Amino acid sequence: MSITLIQQIHDLVWGIPLIVLIMVVGLWLTIRLKGIQITKLAKAFRCLFQKEEGNGEVSTFQALCISISATVGTGNITGVATAIVIGGPGALFWMVITAFLGMAIKYAEGFLATKYRRIENDRLIGGPYAYIEYGMGKKFKWLAKAFAICGTFAAILGIGTMTQMNGIVDAAKNVFDKDGIYMLTLFGHPVSIVIIITGVMVTCSAALILIGGVKRIGSACEKIVPVMAIAYIVICLIILGTHMKTIPESLLTIVKMAFTGQAAAGGVVAITVRNAIQEGVAKGIFSNEAGLGSAPIALATGKSNHPVHQGLMAMTSTFLGTVIICTLTGLCIVVTGAWSSGHQGISITNYAFTTGLPFPSLVGSILLLLCIVCFAFTTIVGWNLYGVRCLDYLTNGNKRIEKVYQWIYILALLMGAFLEINTIWNIAEICNAFMALPNLIALLALSGVIAKETKESLAQEKMEG
Image 1 (tube, rainbow, N blue to C red):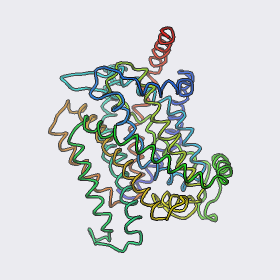
Image 2 (cartoon, one colour; image 1 turned 135 degrees about the vertical axis):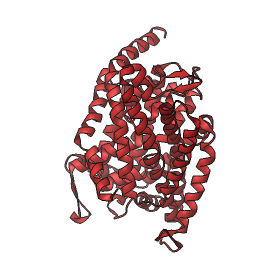
Image 3 (cartoon, rainbow, N blue to C red; image 1 turned 120 degrees about the vertical axis):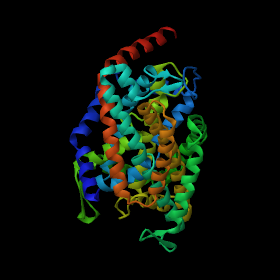
Image 4 (spheres, rainbow, N blue to C red; image 1 turned 135 degrees about the horizontal axis):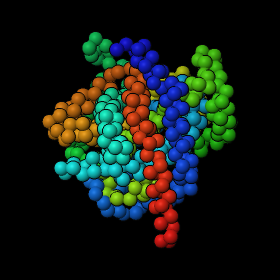
């Protein structure tokens, strides 16, 4: 498939209809749930520290960490940078708007994941395919299978493998071989030795965790996710602290370009309002996955039988991933001028780190590399779980097919080190779109159930004090 054709498919599936559908679903759920992402945000964070028991495989906190690990990845660093370069600083505004509406979507996904999960023949079946089949009814099983098929391919070709690996090797090359001195010829093309070594090391490390199943994945994510999120936030705050005077002007630029657009880089690149909206929404969904239906697969594994609590906890991942981390990344890129520096991909964020931090440039590059490795690595293992569970649903738990799938996943991960970044992002977003459609249909169909039972549950908790 040619790069031009991939771009055309990307532009078609991420056109106005899908963008409007996602925003409408988020707005509809926000209205039906009476702004739950605002009114119950504090309660959502309190739920993180409540221990619950239920028919799951890992603790509720581990399930959330798996969900966050798959959410907080290169989309929060490279994705934000790419969105701002293509769509201008205004894209960041639309990413935050998408996240706000996405919090209501993520609540609904977490709620349905817990309510409609099933245990059959010692297999836990939970996620969009479960709430489509058991919530909407057996006649919609074809739609459940459509989601599972899309999820299986999205894990391999989309978020879980190539984009994450590409972000890691690019960051490593920026630190250890920025000028491309140490090169080898691979399949007729010059490739940095750093890229080859990094790709092999990450692939082997991921394989060791992936073969351990959901419990090993949950244990790894529980340890890595909180530390990596806090560390990254602190680094971004240091950059913003050294650019305090330019923050007000940068915020004004972000809001202004969200509605007006302008010509960037001396008129070379025309940034329109449509570009800002399209890039902001696409990369926003990529960063928080609200509407894709991926997070419910992880949330269904949590030991909780309380749909409302699980939904509230699910909201926090979108708040952390996009409202906090993506906003901080975007602000750092804008206040340092990295977005108009002429760089591409991870090099944009690297420019912000090396010029924005009050340390030698090498220190900034190394800090970014460590952040990228942690973010991307946890996303790799989290999305593997999603792909395996979708395949489990399709094959009724056929272990032989799952093993073959695992090796294909690992191979796709390694391939991501050597592919061109824009093509990788386009493929990933195409997979996202085809995953989102069945899930969004289910959320609309079951919105009445979500609203009714949420209202009843919260009222009951209020009565009990």
